Each structure stands twice: as structure tokens, then as C-alpha cells.
Length: 325
Image 1 (tube, rainbow, N blue to C red):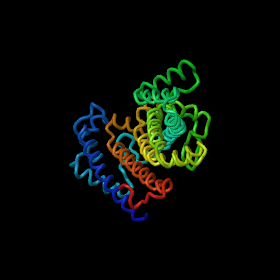
Image 2: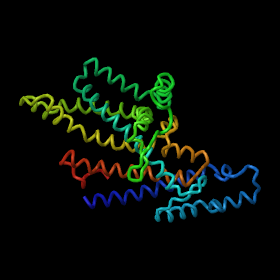
Image 3: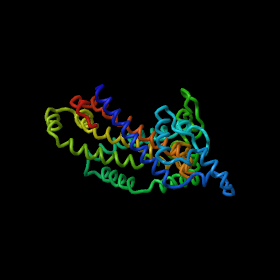
Image 4: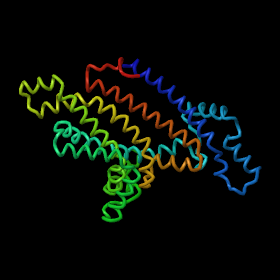
């Protein structure tokens, strides 16, 4: 196991290095942040002074080398716009994004698994057909449109839920969290539901497909022939055997929820990392953009590693030495 973790960490460092180079060069090529950050009436001397103070007067390879050297010390640079460490800005926004993604994933799993099981166990029933039709809608409806409709119905027409913001927070181990307040849950419900819709549909279809395949296996037929109760057949022989692909997808999709909550955070004015990224792109704040993407890649790597380790708990036949790299 130790060799597996070491190998994965080495691969992770290589992935981070390649990604940082691609992002750094890509962001460098899209424009000059000085044109946005300073007064349009500034003279050439002022432009040159600001450019030099931000280190933008050096060749891109030298800027990247300085960035990598500083990153190895845990310094991802200072925000051009806020003039504070980029990592600090992102970590301040991270709890909001993580709790939004966590709530969305819980909604998707709690609703998606039972509905997918039902659709797999009774595929010809009207309820199963309705579930699958609903999952197609979940794939098809644009996230931004669903978010606007939720605001229109539950905030404007009914007045049940607040339309924007995060609500009241409490300090938990130094983190500001809204999960432990009623006002926080009221603010969280709509954006989490909006973010969960696509993942919910995905889990329904994945669970149904796994259930249909498992029901045809010999171990299920043998269990039924022995007179094992149907509930035990489903919970032990079916569900446990379809959990590995579900855990894989759920783990990676949780990472994507964190990375791609940008649309939902923008619609509901949720103060998370996605909204920070949009604001940073608007002013070409390179350190924040690069730092954000590096942190997202690092989170994906950690989640993928956790999923691989969890395999051994779900199926003892899986060994980390043979797990995917």
C-alpha cells in the first residue's frame, strides 16, 4: 500500500507540473491584466511601473520559473486585484463551495440510489418508466435555466426560499459554515438542488444499469433458489456488487461538483471559489486563476486516491497493487 501511495503522489506532482505550465501559458496568452487594472488615462511611465511591479515585464518562461519556485514553498503568488496571497483568497472561499458540493452530492446519492434500484428491479412498471423519463430531463435541462426557474418559483412566486447569498454561518474549527444554521439551509437548498440535478440523473441510470446486470448473475439466482428473502438479495448480493462503479463515479463527480459549480454559484450569488474564478477572469488575475486550477487538480487527485483505497473495503479481491494508476 505504501508503494502505491508513493507512486500516486509522484504521478500527482507530475500532473500538477504539466497542468500549471499549460494554464500559465494559456492565461499569459489571453491578454494583459495591466490594461484592466490601471486607469485608462495612465501614461506610459505609469504603465511600465505597474507592469514591472507585477513582474509582467519578464519573459513568460522566467515568470513561470519564478512561479514554480515560489509554489514549492507554498506561495502561489499575490492576487493582482486584491494584493493578497491568491491561496488565501481561495481558501477563504473553499468552505462555501465544498459545503455546496457536499449537499448536492448527498441529494444525488440519497435520491438517486433508491430510484435507480427501483427502476432496475421493476423495469416494466409505470414508476420505473417515469423515473427514467425524469432522468432524461435531468440530463437535458440547462443548469442555468433550472436555477432561474427555481428562483422564479420558490423565491418570487411562493416566497419560501431566499434567492441569493449564503445565509448565516457559524465558526467550526476556524471555518465559516452555513450547514449548522436554519438560515444557511434555506439559502443552500435551491443551489444544492440545482447543482445535484445532473448527478442525480447520472446515478439513477448507473444504478439501474448495474442492478439489471446484477439480477442476471448466477449468485443472485442461487440466493433466490436457496430461499433468501428478496430484501436480503437486493441489499447484500445486488447493491454491494454494484457499489464499486457507483463509488468511482460518485467520487469523481464530487470533484467535478467542486470544480464546475461556477454556473450555480453565479446564478445564486453563492460566495464560493467558482464565483471568485469568474471575478478573477474578468480582470485577468493570473495568480488566482492558476492557483484555483492547481487546487482543483489536487482535489481531484486526492478524491481519486481515496476512491482507490475505498475499493478494498467494498471488495477484498481488489488490491491496491493492481489498482489503476
